Image 1 (tube, rainbow, N blue to C red):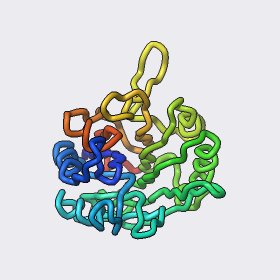
Image 2: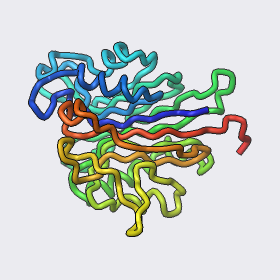
Image 3: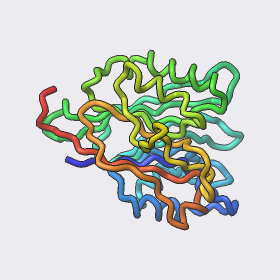
Length: 253
């Protein structure tokens, strides 16, 4: 079967024109038509976004029957964080605290998604996060995830995706996932100079590849790209990236 995954920092649905327009985010989501949508900077009950429960309403309007959210930052009114929307049943969900010291609160939203209604062992483990602004902070956040029981329980053969806004301008975290952990990066381009990340930030003139999708297990990458139609260049300060995978559900590995 094929599974399409979208990762998108939606900037609370406030575009670079400073207008709150969730309809633009919905347009992008509908165009990509992914099976699994990983969102960052998602508001819930915040005045700037009309007190909208953004994860719930985006899931409802875009036709995703399942969603989970991790509200990491508490504001004077409301919260914001990450959300995972899915066409596959969510078997389990946990928001992992990856906050480092007195830095801004951050989280990694873990969900296990069922790929086969008749066989619970056929699933995909998804980690959706938004990392900090300093390289040192990001390394520590990565260490927290790698030592967390939800991640440590997985073998290299388990279907697994780690995606979101890595804030990793220099691709320093690539080695942490690829060396010894057998991940591959769907959002890297192969060039004569090596691996180069798809550039997604800022949306109107991308210079940095901040938004990444790493994968391993029985996932076979078909293609990956960024969505760069006009609406996406305005809807958020990031462009979304998406990848399509082939998964062999008959494999016994």
